[in-house]
Image: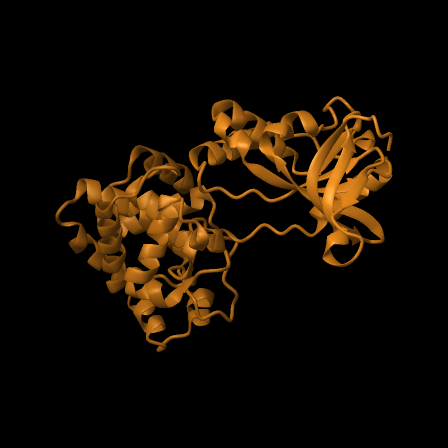
Length: 361
């Protein structure tokens, strides 16, 4: 590198991956918009090293940064440098030989291989809150070895990425009020506390669990008629806990399963009420009960135990079942709710009435 060439300078750690040198550095976020480039959208896919930006993702990440300036976490960016770099180690031996300063020519082109949505969101977030520009993000630098290598890097970085299940995301998300409600219910409602699947978004045939944490969250969201970002008050928690406790007391099969007197696998195989479609339908029904039938709503729920929940009941076909398989599609949730409402003596709303007429015709 020319001694008189202007450079960007970063404290960095040097390493080796697949026989190639790489460097990890902490970069001030205010430099991210100007330092890192992205292949323009008009370039054909075969000539790009990245996918095009999904602009709908940027506001969500931006809001996350702006709303949580003292409590956010961003994973590293991965970038390729199309020029020779210079690494000045702290020492000639030991740990010092791989710790030092990374010098990157200012004329070098640095392309993002992974993290273009984070980069765009950082740029927007700094415009809204300039203080974020003083924070740092870690960057993993590689030396650019051409388009084919960059495209392979993108494929490799994304090939093994696995999105966490909705249930474990709910379990670990302390920013989201609805997730907090789901965790609260999984502790306070007796059947849920014993039989909530906290990690997976689906339940295997052999599982001893009955409902996923996600299904509890979504059903309770419907129950309280909350939006995704609405706050949950202590009163909301009490209402939801009271409602689901009352529902479970009128579902003897759930109680038997909780007490190990009935296998959950048998319930799932033979009954509708052991599936999320029923829980979601009950959330919708509960919203109407709480708003239209106070204080007599608990009495209405006693009729739940009189419903024939067996999958052999032909009335479920087209409602909770489609060709014999349980369906959680919105129309099936509503039609399942219609059937339950009719047994509880609750009138259908306009949307439900219209759907019921179409179903019966």
